[in-house]
Image (cartoon, rainbow, N blue to C red; front, side):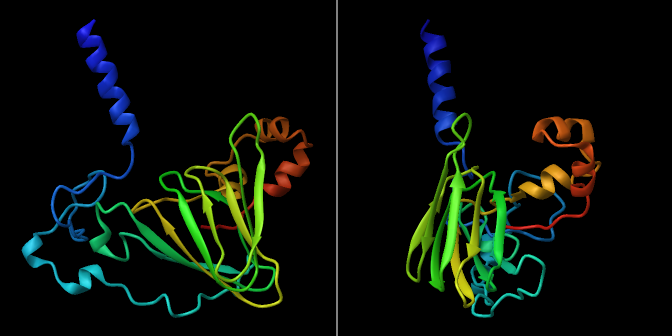
Length: 217
């Protein structure tokens, strides 16, 4: 009984701390030249770390929103900033043209906190089954909104001017799954029969939707 209790306690603790691994040293700058595959990035020798390993320049420049979505995400994750490795954080700049949107998507490994720097932005997320409740709000300059980890969320510019937002995420590599891409743009495609039944539509509708679709972050 005692061993069973210990095992259950260990499992509970492991689930409670299921997130990016905590660093066991001051830092672990990602070694982009290593071919070793691990859960994260291999550390380079800390004695070789330099200021540029912890530095990124580029968020002052507006993203190019000349695309069908009218938005652009500029990420600052471990791939752009090696010093983020093992720190469990990252960020993005998002630019939105008028009527532009960051389409429904999820971050499988991170919660997100977003701040509007300029403009008016309609945002929201959907709770998990069985409720699937939409929680949404229109944000103005200086407003902050949180998207819980793993839940489908979106943003749309509802003003007449460009919108700029900065978001922080609780992972060095939060990942992104765009709903439209995953459902209608998978490779190979999901069976038309499956999608037609799931969405309760004719197969012709699914055929029309199963074409190259748009990304998002």
